[in-house]
Length: 135
Image 1 (cartoon, rainbow, N blue to C red):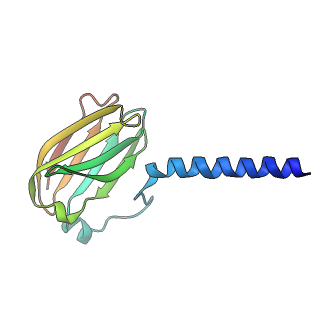
Image 2: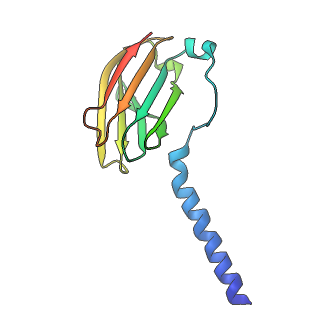
């Protein structure tokens, strides 16, 4: 009986450890949230389409500072409200990291202001990824 309890405790420990290790890829993600027109008008909306086979981590880079935006799963799309304190700007870069940072692409500089939208398409292998700003 004690052996079964030890195995159960070990299995629970491994499950908690793996769950915590994977949690960073789900920071700030709120599935199913609807972006209101009022919220979108107060900042910039980033529309991301990940065509790759790996989850990508997105970061906003401005004035030498890198800020986590979100993670987007493979073959998925997401719309994200960016921090309103970043805008207006003419020097925003967006970095996409895949395979735990082994692959990286940076797009920009992007000029955007409140009410604008950025369409980011992340290609497989990150080569050819592009971003467009529009109102």
